[in-house]
Length: 136
Image: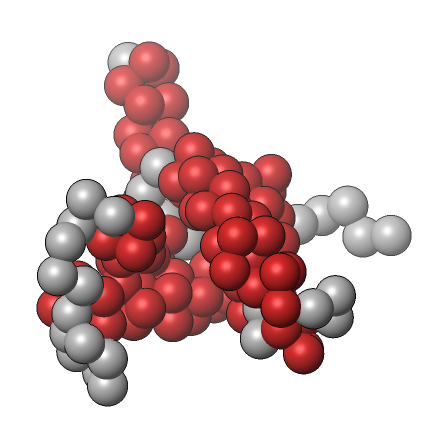
């Protein structure tokens, strides 16, 4: 197994992070602003309102690679709750209960909470700045 995580791995990791964050953010845009073919959530003090805020803000932070590990962990939990509350009661198989997207996002965010944002992220840039400041 290749233990050098440079080159194409870093490009692929960061591309996945950016695209997944962008796609997730669109769900938040639907709920928070009523854009992209869905009505706006009227009351943000509901599970759907909170989900919209988490999807919009969390998707943006994931795209930027900022606070990736804790944000991804929270979003993974959000997607697990969404799956078990809204999809699983409608049947066992995710393709039948329409929960495959929630299940996929749950595990994608769990992956990023374990792996971090990657080399081309604000998290990486801030870590390099801290290292440079400590070395002075």
